[in-house]
Image 1 (tube, one colour):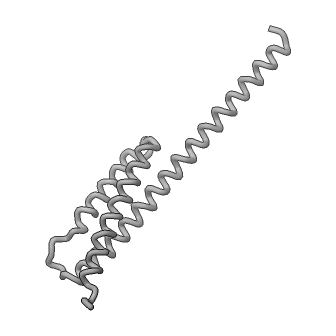
Image 2 (image 1 turned 90 degrees about the vertical axis):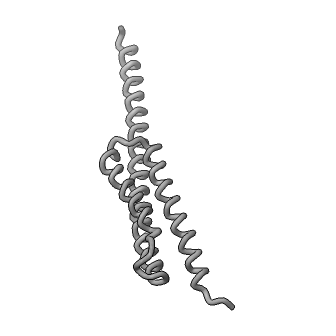
Image 3 (image 1 turned 90 degrees about the horizontal axis):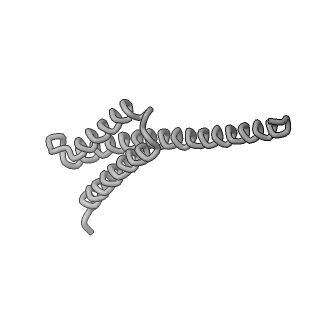
Length: 123
């Protein structure tokens, strides 16, 4: 192989490596962002569940079936899964877990809206 062909081959290899490293960094960035968003969603759900429990107890007392308890257990299951599998989880799995947490928060918001309507004075 002559010098110009070798130089061209080396440049092509270097360019391919740069493209591969760039793709890997973008993937890593998306994964880190997904993990951060997942943890933020879990923290928001936990805070909202604590508020919901307080609001429900204020209306119904402490001796009721706790509708928040199952959501708290689900959140704990998600956090345990994340601790055990998060470092190996795919981007799609992380997004799926975050979506399930966001859906749980939506269900709690719906329940809290019902409670608020029930508490509102009848005009």
